[in-house]
Length: 532
Image (cartoon, rainbow, N blue to C red; front, top):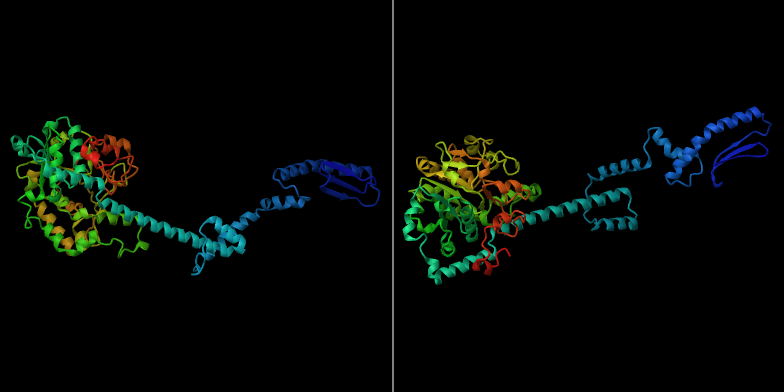
């Protein structure tokens, strides 16, 4: 910075060091001035120069090299000093105003939308969009992408539902090969258990497990995990119940793959004399109501207003329409006292569980005169899995439901239940179950949608003894962020939900808990390429 005083003393100029920018120029009148006046002027400039220097430094640092006067500083510092907004803030305010205006306007039918942000910028440049047109196109693009994202989410849920309802090729192969083995291999047809062990099937000194399934691979994992985790495997008796089409293959598997010293019995539903149409009205109900079969096997999109349905609600509805819910095997647990008339206590297991701890202490739990020992699902660390109350399962706008049930009552879980059959036989649980099932059928399934648990929640009301939640951990079939440490500690882990571990849609990080008990050295498993 330099100070120039003209020889005539008529002007004083302050300029930058490159002499091209004049910062200040003071003209002095064409008359003689005294040295006192000159001294005072220089003194004022001495105070002024540091301020000018600081402003020049600010301009240089901000990259404004073309400011030629204090007007540059005024434009920059003025709005801040006077509390005004600068141009960028004014631009944001104006654009927000435009967005509000176009949010209520209808988008023209023939409006051509760019496919990407870069194309939008290119169209703006080529077509000279004004701010309002740009905002309208932007809104239309966002709404289009939201619709496409929503549609893809619903398509994903439908595909997942079909995958969960189908039989994987490897498991179908296993069933066919074992069925063929049953017809050609006498050893695969040997009696289970051997004749000398038949009295054990009704001996209450043993620990009796009941498993109802048509999935051979899943059954093998449940039985193997129970035996390997037990401190007293010689006390274990498994009663495996399956349907007629799977019986030969299921029998072959356990005949050829012994789990001794544990004992396994395999029976088909058609081998129980008690399971007649008169005793099991659910069979007649399912067979005689075409609307029910259409509900579970029909078009799940038809009639559904997807624009007003959230993906989470749609997923829940799809799960409730799984065909397994009209299978007799799924309703079989309500007939345990009649199917096993000589047994006093059994543990009923679902086929999508893995046993990781010795379950023999379950027989020592005092049920306090109750029928069903179960884990409650309304309290726990996992608020998503363990937050189920009756309101989650029933339609409380239905007058019968509103009259008889409390929406805040805690629910409990199927999957691993201790049943006191001797106490059960003194109750009317089965009759209550049938009564409410018929009422729901009469109301066209408007009282509840989800499977066999809701009628059981009603039928077992007042007959449930809560047990510690560490015995039964749920949610591994629909909760991807399951706590792995808790899963390792649980006695039984349950893959309830669509993402079963034997399906490709199963969660990879949770699958090893299950595959640990798959015998990959078995020739049938290898030849069917199961979960390679």
